[in-house]
Length: 450
Image 1 (cartoon, helix red, strand yellow):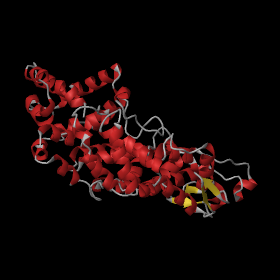
Image 2 (cartoon, helix red, strand yellow; image 1 turned 135 degrees about the vertical axis):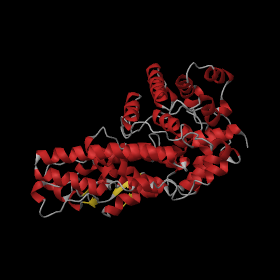
Image 3 (tube, rainbow, N blue to C red; image 1 turned 180 degrees about the vertical axis):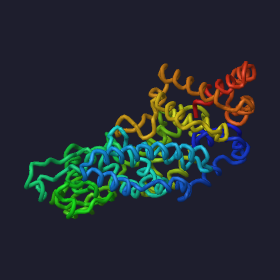
Image 4 (cartoon, helix red, strand yellow; image 1 turned 45 degrees about the vertical axis):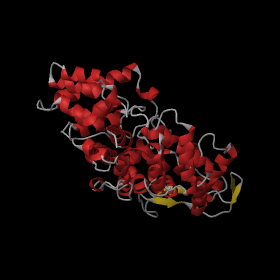
């Protein structure tokens, strides 16, 4: 195998090379990746010490039920601090991970099923959402991930399904409440079929009816706090569920309570349009901003024929000829770039606040995507003149914080050597100081691309 293929495996599929990685991976890059496709590879045991979403939600909503503003403020402060600590631990896990392909898949699916801090109520539980609904399923069945994500308190809150009330439900008949279609629309448009996947506005409304009642146990009226205990887990509220038959994409679903939407989700997960939509996003992520149709067809076929088996889909991605043909077609996001910098310097300690401020300045603060569509996966979003300037500023700052004994020429050999131009090598060898040489390496196209 070639050194270039090792570079592609470590950067396109992984999160960048650390000391000694190139030598290890060069022997068989594809096999190195395949060895990571296993159920436990994405489970981050070091992160499991952080609280579950149900515990966090219970704590927050119990405080809210008291109307004690001081207590509410204190609880909010506590979980904002815990959020920052876990986000830092999450990055450290990515830096130290021996299964970076699994970590890349976690990031991909977490972005696909975006839940963002732009809505304050979801902020404290977003790391838990990723741990609970994404990580266990990245090499499992797409249907299982879709079900877990849709029924998670973070998604139900973010897309307002907890306030969606069926017109003909028990509560809907008594009060002037309305149905919210946000969750139904985003599942169809962003999570499964895609905007051109063949659904209509009628399908959105029918699906929204089926999803009424999907809620969580923290959503309580103060008058009911003694009768109905607060909890932070999924809860189906039959009092707000729209009864009756629903028809979606030409198929009839008879009244079935909570199971109604579950059946619809399974059918959406197995739909041909979903296979095409997911395949297109995966090929765009791993091959090129302009995904080649031939590669899309290959991944679509595997996704559809396997019933959305993400283990088989991941194997198929590694087998794509197109993915090994060009070493630098994709631009790293700021988060990917930051992780690859830290992997390159073997996890040398960088202050968490410096990382957080850097990512914020580069427009890529974790769990803070601007919309349910997630972060864009194309270079045009990340490479504006201002964005490039921010990247250069950040790598320059990081370089000055590294030990003076760190050799930029050795760092180049351990990271981008297979694709490094003669010009880059000359610039680094001729740099006036060690930190300038390191900054030149990290700011180079060879390091910023994958």
